[in-house]
Length: 428
Picture (cartoon, rainbow, N blue to C red):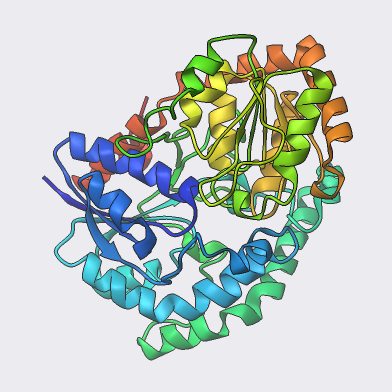
């Protein structure tokens, strides 16, 4: 039995894939510790994991800063520059405690103290990526959140996109000054960039999204292993349907499902009210998953129902279409369900995920500033009436369901634990 520390920061879209790994590793006989923000302590301990608190200590239900954090223009800078980077020294101290006597350290995307912990302790380290944008490939260029129009430049030469990435590094360089001083104080090389090139493990980097969304590229890290999505959709406290929803889903034609995931839903604005109106315009049944911290929206009736939360894996396969924000966790669930999408992206990875789904032919995109009942209704009418969307969504769903992301990732983790050459091993 090995002791494995899983560390992540962010929304449920960041946490759930690590829970999937943790549950599978526990099933295989390993002891799993989680290092994350205190907000998730009860959830993780209820699943039988040992829990260690990790800075930054914030409550995702505190909505005061949510609009800025999820905004396409301000979100990434707000989270990295104002929240993560100033917290790295405290994060480092927390993680040093969490990895004591552990055998392996598996980290999420913005656990920026990871490399320093590894260098100071010598622990085996596996890094992970959940969304294609985080790999910054010049061969498969992502859509930057503040500039979705850059999708039209995808066809330009690789050297152009390398130049864009160099520009991004230059822009974020000043953000890292406190991080460089932290590294210097530890006696470590301060010339290290945890945002771009320095975030990958030399042992194994798990690419935890489907090949349907993005395929391996020449400039991915040499230690990359693409596993497919690692799905967790709730057990115990969140794994059952709310009263009445299962009966509603089975009592008529497939509904349109409207959701904004677990983070954007805290800055929903009039999304759910306009969504209810759009469903009425179309004469369609609908399910509105409006969030635990919000009040039920106006417009609900016997055909348009609302619930705080429901397991996506149980609801989406019974939908005619899903309207969502394109967080990678939600996107993966819709792709697996094999139904069309209408996507209203916010920030971070969402504009890029949305663009990839549109290029697959399974989705269309509507801007937040344009989302109202009339426009959403017109786009949903097209999505539901044109067979190509449903056919391509079904094809994508079949491919996603044939992947075994959690199993493959855990096979690779176990191989790394026993010292096998992970790069030369074949995982299926």
